[in-house]
Amino acid sequence: MIPVSRPYFSVEEETAIVAALRSGWVTQGPRVAEFERAFAAALDQPEAVAASSCTAGLHLVLRALDVGRGDEVVVPSLSFIATANAVVHAGATPVFADVDLATYNLDPASVARALSRRTKAILLVHQVGLPADVAAFRRLARKARVRLVEDAACAIGSQVDGRPVGGDAHVAVFSFHPRKLVTTGEGGMIVTRDRRLAKRLRSLRHHGVSISDFARHAADRVVVEAYREVGYNYRMSDLQAAVGLVQLGRLHEIVARRIEQGERYDRAFAKHPTLAIPHVAPNVRFNYQTYLLRLLAGSRVTRDELMQRLLDQGIATRRGVMAAHREPAYRGQRRRVSLPATDEADRSAIVLPLYHSMTAAEQDRVIEAVLTLV
Ligand SMILES: Cc1ncc(COP(=O)(O)O)c(C=O)c1O
Image (cartoon, rainbow, N blue to C red; front, side):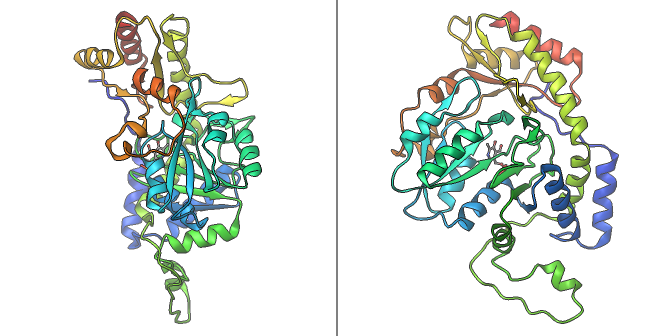
């Protein structure tokens, strides 16, 4: 069976995790702090704050920006459901806007229509790792006087004009779920230019505490901590950070391989009359975290038929990015604009297998099977 995805680990991650275990410090501690410093440096951001997941990170950010009850946050419906869920966790209402079918990213015109007097923020997703047009949304957010938060869950290693996605963000959140290019099993990382925001995030992820466990432990005077507001346990563990540090050190190699593989799919499918490959603008480096292919009118099979026929041949796929407004959890949600591109992508997109250790022969098998069926 060719899987959709497979994490890439070596003996180095094993060594690092054993060393963390033997250190006796397994919750958030020195390795998390080191991972944060390394991540901030990689993103060229002054602050990085680790969390237990990207979802937790997004929730923390909304809470720290005082987004809550009575507020609206504009989000794409076409995203993993975590994007909308983070808004609901904060007590606010997600308002679904439509995407551009070429890049699967939010369409500024649709977002402009979704803004209201209650809008407090726009949650801009860099879908499947394809960078969204941040400049356009920054202008929109400034004009509407709302916050811009970037959901960069999938975008580690992607760039625009040579700058890393999230590198110039006021605040952006990454995921280390195993389908991502850098994984810690579960985990997330917030990057921000705003040091006060980072301070509040660090406190909120640990129940609103005034000083971290590790700092208290390392102090030579007794420190009694205070809990200043009601926060969460959204901490990353040092075991996860140990793995993350090794993975991050390999980012360059991981991205280079993924781009080589992604472009191989692009070349195979680009000229097919009923297939649409992801649109990669000339100034963009796409990390190809997820390879999304779309079936166009005239295809001999539906998306679901294609998935089944590929599975019959031992090739696993997934439906493309979900449309949250079509899921039972959000079906009652009326606050949205019309979503024709989202509905089209929801019907017609498929995720093909792509992972670091995938061989050329395995990729050829997938390419041949798809081209024979569509
Ligand atoms: C766009 C987007 N946002 C948020 C998440 C949630 O990430 P995590 O699983 O780390 O909470 C994902 C996960 O795939 C995602 O794709």
